[in-house]
Amino acid sequence: MEDRSIRSILVPVDFSKYANKAYNSALNLAKCYRAEVHVLYVLDTEFITGVAHIESQGDMAARWRSRSEKKLKSLYNKHGKEGVAGTTLLREGKPYAEILRAAKELKVDMIVMGSRGRTGLERALFGNVAEKVARLCDVPILLIK
Image (cartoon, rainbow, N blue to C red; front, side):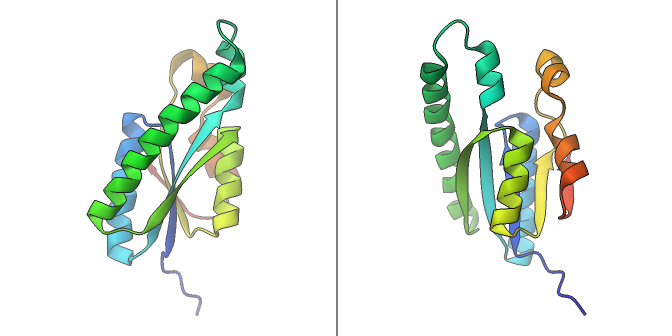
């Protein structure tokens, strides 16, 4: 019989309230299964390209990267307080593609992510990341509302 225990969980975040709920749920699961948690933020290069007409794309990307690193570090510190091992990752590209790539590279057993993130115009232009990941991923996904 195949071992179906959860040893590794990927949590893609966009720092929205839905992503924060997903992160907390992943920590609780990790404590129950003694799993590690990998927190991933993807700097959406398509979005930056679309809004960077006001300032240079490089400047905007650098600022977002710096802010994201600080937020990821804060989440990583929470890992330690909760007694959960894991890592944080910052990647650039299309969020759904980078989530799928990270899941494969890290050989995670599960993805826990918010069911929503972007809203309004951003969602209309780029689609829902959670929907794309759920359709294309090979591992179980827990979507948190």
